[in-house]
Length: 128
Image 1 (tube, one colour):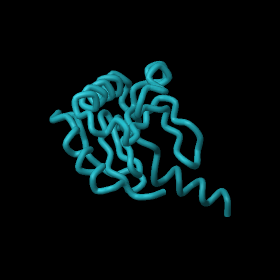
Image 2 (cartoon, rainbow, N blue to C red):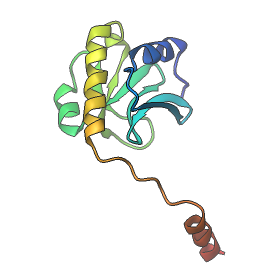
Image 3 (spheres, rainbow, N blue to C red):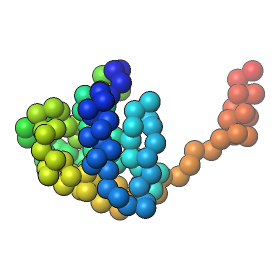
């Protein structure tokens, strides 16, 4: 995987909504935005990724600059859209999609934190 371009990172930071519920952090070394522990907006190589839900992603797939996100390894992320360079100059459209992604993801139940520590240690001991 290529790291996101500087232009994509700048665009990402410009489009993140000013909302106290939004958390900025990296995923796979790429800048992303989270709400309730779930990613709703991120960067990937020379594109942006937005979580809008499977129905909406399927409906928008094929519009200029939009496709269901399919990273090289791992298959399609059916809830996510990938925004290609063809749409990256339309800040109004992008801001609307980011707001939609935030709304969709914020309405989902908060992500539960994975069990760590003791449970992982016990699993490692069982293998030994």
